Amino acid sequence: MLHRKMLAQGHDQADWVDHAIVKERARIQHALSFLFPICEALKEAGDVIVIKSLDHWPDLGNDLDLFSNAPPSDVVAVMSKRFQAHPDERSWGDAWRTNGILLFPVCLNWSRYTYRVWARRRASRYHEFSGLTSRHVQLDGQPFPVPAPEDRLIISTLQRMYRHFYLRLCDVVDTARLVDSGSVDYPYLKNLAQSAGLWDGLATYLVTVSGYVKTYRGEYLPLPSLVTDAAHFGNELVYFKRKFLRIPIFPQAARFYASEWKGCCSTEICVALYA
Image 1 (cartoon, rainbow, N blue to C red):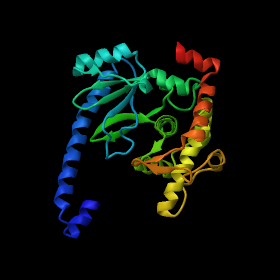
Image 2: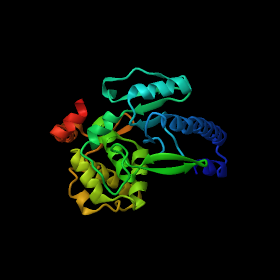
Image 3: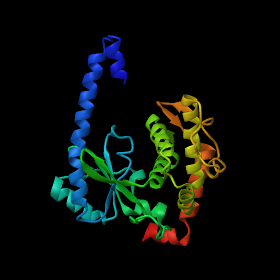
Image 4: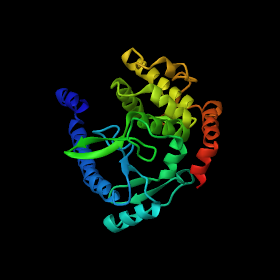
């Protein structure tokens, strides 16, 4: 849209934008050419699902995030044998995942990450995926397994409210699109989030996004009262700093984090964490 407007107005940077778009599309196609064979190869070791990376399609992030419930050694063996990949160094905050270095960066998330959040989950009306539920989307004629809407919101909440403590524009757009789709089962989402001690943070995340949506389109997201009543604050406490919308850490985010770990320290979840 920006490019079309620049062309219509005869802007002198229109060619530069066109070149950037062509280059980005080529990068995305290059990434997809690896993603499908990687998913197929990892099926040899266990189940696999693409998380986060396809949430804002047709845009794509800087890396490809996948989840596998296979043992890490099996996944590393498949990636090394089939794609000549090797594990990258992990930061202290990435103890639950490893990075595979390919022609396109690949982040593989282990089952312990999912156990931490979904260890209490049992059989439901959804297909079980070691704690994650999956569906398929078609991109360029190829099927990719992606999380169900509720799991997408759980993952987004963990990333934004419990790990990075900031929002990006794409988080607001992607979450708004998901809520507007009407595909979220909120009672099920609440039950899922409560079992992992994440409900307050998730509700606050949704209400915060909703506040920004109202700023730009004049109305809030169609969130049920069970979400809005559980939120601790909205976008009124979020502030802009160093290119991101920052979530207040003390005391707000710290309370969410403490509540999460309190939930994780039930006997059942601790067994999953430290087994």
